[in-house]
Amino acid sequence: MTTGSTAPLLLYVEDEILIQQMLVSDLEEAGFRVLVSSTGSDAMAQISSRADDIQGLITDINLGGDPSGWDVARHARELHSGLPVIYVTAASDQEWTSQGVPGSVMITKPFVPAQVVVAISTLLITS
Image (cartoon, rainbow, N blue to C red; front, top):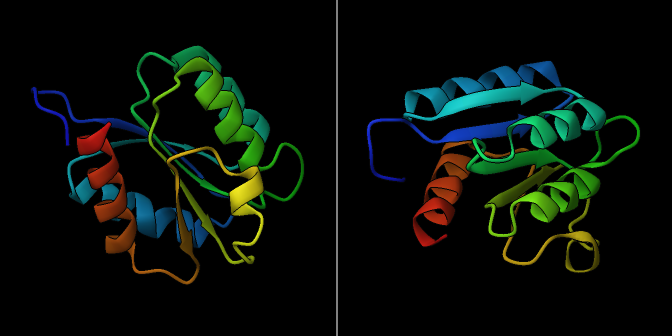
């Protein structure tokens, strides 16, 4: 994680409420502040308005419509080129090489929340 008194702010985009609640709880217990979005369009709006504050993005790929998690991550990287990105999905990761942003991490559902906490912590340290 980053140094300083303010915990890193993450944007977590997930349309499945139970998964969302579980991971937000674990991220907060690990010391992160978390903005939550249930749709791609809301996530893009949050990114646009808080690009300087958001230090990491965790997004589901299939968000029940457009834009997808792929789109959200590309938009985030347009505004913040080095932003750490983690994709979580129940779908196959075959599209990741063509759709995912460079340097991102893919975690397949079902996952243990600690996997995501470790992955985002590692990306924040190396970014």
